[in-house]
Length: 337
Image (cartoon, rainbow, N blue to C red):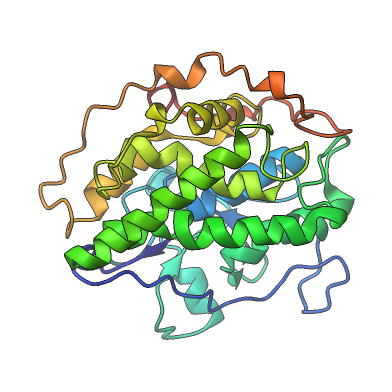
């Protein structure tokens, strides 16, 4: 999710840009960025679904000690994501006030937006990658030497074709679809995006009616990518983005599936509903010029029984759940149900 140009939100049609900085951090360092404990810092807003994927993956894989985490203010301004949640308004590791400073160290006068997730090389302060599509896949496949004992295989090789196919549909119609509907500038554009979104959600509901997870019988990357949209659905997409044919809570299968994941260690413990709501309603001034943040919805339902375990499935396969988040990374009480 980019920073900058906040008043333009809702005034021009949505176009998901490709990551400009697509370097990869690999086990063999073939692109000049070898996997190395402590060398890199993940900058990821808890408000942003694209960044939240990386936060979930990092927790599930137990990479907290190997890859440090910076959480910027959910209310970025036109200078980009800012570290106003930290002492002296600076990231304590990178020493910068705005994420754009790491972009500038990589490429001066870079014309694109400053987006999260971003991985920064700590020694040089330079951005390495903002490629939200490959960051999580690389965490699962290239960072294996640093995974915790019992880490799940989030991208199992025998299932990759199916995972890729499901993720492509979810990306086009759901992850991106809510934005195309929310930022539409014409009625037909909005209606087409909304129709595609709910058609895909219905199909996903049919798929999940008889199986606990999207692909295979364990959590995979596909589930992470769907979850980060579903967890925001009633809080922001239903009202703010006008994706209101029904609420997530009104779809029995998807609501149970989302609660199952939310209650799984590594998922819900990364979600900050306060950051989510304030970001969408206060940053997208073209859509919500008053900046008023709604009081609802009631979040207590996220903690209710889901009964999805009756479908079988082994959340972590042969692995184990991650332990509780470190105290410094716990979501404040006002951001949780």
